[in-house]
Each structure stands twice: as structure tokens, then as C-alpha cells.
Image 1 (cartoon, rainbow, N blue to C red):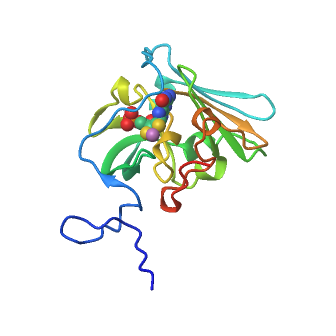
Image 2 (tube, rainbow, N blue to C red):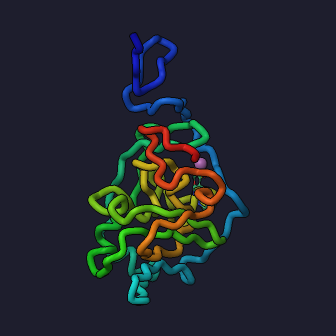
Length: 197
Ligand SMILES: Nc1nc2c(c(=O)[nH]1)N[C@H]1C(S)=C(S)[C@@H](COP(=O)(O)O)O[C@H]1N2
Ligand SMILES: [Mo]
């Protein structure tokens, strides 16, 4: 008989139901960046959503801050196997940003300052599942962790949460982003261990 558990067995022998299989808990906050940290002045910062019709919806730093900013308490899971439970963030919901955007495309390419890209289905950005995060743990985001603003999609592996987010591009088809071209899964559900292909 096979005994299947979602989580790891802890030191005390208990299974943490919030820890996906193959993950361990960490209390610190590792920095994982594929390149150098870009430094973006918020005066120059801009976020945009580009739709199929080539329409560009753009928000400045001030325009973004004029929108409702939500508190987000969530767990995060990196494909390199660390998980951090109960992290607290503040940010603008993608539901708020997409409220004025008309598109028939079902896929999104997230683009960062510095050139990083990652792909995600539009459905995973809506319904209270994703934010443009502006604060972590009560402070503005460290540049190393994606400041001034990063994507936060906590139900997918953390490589989907693009740091230094610059924009989202709507696409009719699912195209691979940076890590996805280099062997990472196109979707990346930590509960299904969708790590690599
Ligand atoms: N722009 C950008 N975003 C990125 C990355 C990156 O290299 N560049 N790394 C990703 C990966 S693999 C992870 S695990 C998380 C790490 O975020 P952290 O450095 O804040 O822990 O950011 C993701 N977003
Ligand atoms: Mo990662």
C-alpha cells in the first residue's frame, strides 16, 4: 500500500499541509536573479498592458498608487525547493488593472525591466490570484526582491512572479518566457510539482 502525503514530514514527524511535496521551509528570503538588479527611479517607472489590438494601457507610479492597494498574506514556493509560509505583501490586484482592458487573448507574457520574461495564462492573473506588489513585510520592495514593483502570483512557482515588472503583453498562444525556454514548466503548479519538462 502506498501512503501519499502532500507535504514533507517535519522533524517532529508531523506533515505540514501547507508545504507542497519536495519543498522545505525557510525563514529567510533568498534572492534569485538571472542577471544584475536594475535600478529604476519611480519617476521614470511605468507599467503597461498591451492588448491584441496594439492598444497600450499605461500606468505611472502615481497612477498605480491612486488605485486600491490590497494586503496579501500568502505562501510562496520556489522551484529550487524553498517555501516561505505566511509572507505579507501590499499591492494592486491585476483584477483592478484589467478592469479597463478589453482582450480576447488568453495568454500573457510578463516583461521586466532588464529583459526577464515569463508566460502565464490570463485566467491565473484574475480572480484575486495576482498583484503588482509594491511592499513586502511592511516596507517598500528591496531592489533585489524586485523593487520598485514586481508581479506576485503566489499559487504558481515563484519564477512566474517577475521582479522589476514593466508590462504584460497579451498573446493568442502560450509562448515560453526566459526560464520556460530553458527547461522550466510552461505552467508551474507547485502542488503538482510542475518543475521542468
Ligand atoms: N526579473 C526577474 N524576475 C524574477 C527572476 C529573475 O531572475 N528576474 N527570478 C525568478 C525566480 S527563479 C524566483 S525564485 C523569484 C525570486 O524572487 P526573490 O529574489 O525575491 O526571492 O523571482 C523570479 N522573478
Ligand atoms: Mo526560482
